[in-house]
Image (cartoon, rainbow, N blue to C red; front, side):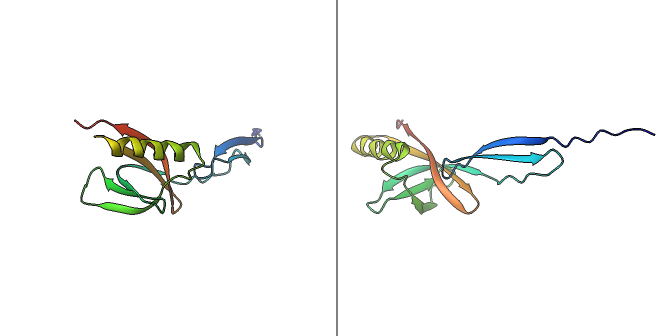
Length: 119
């Protein structure tokens, strides 16, 4: 008769919620399946930042498609300040501002911003 060793030690996961920035710790047995949400990352050209706090975005692969439903990051956050400062800088001179939109579980947030000089 063979003896089979069963691994019952838990596996520790440390995760970061990309929507809130909150860290989570999870202990799970080695033989359990852990579900992970799908995250879609897409870059858009910013056409305008409205007074209501929304971004007017153009799809990089299809410039005829526009979006006006993505909210700009909160002004008090580091990313929010970068978006507003960069928009003021880009709108005053010739340049382009691109944002990275992260989508998961039906929610979308701006995850990054960059400036590109026009050619």
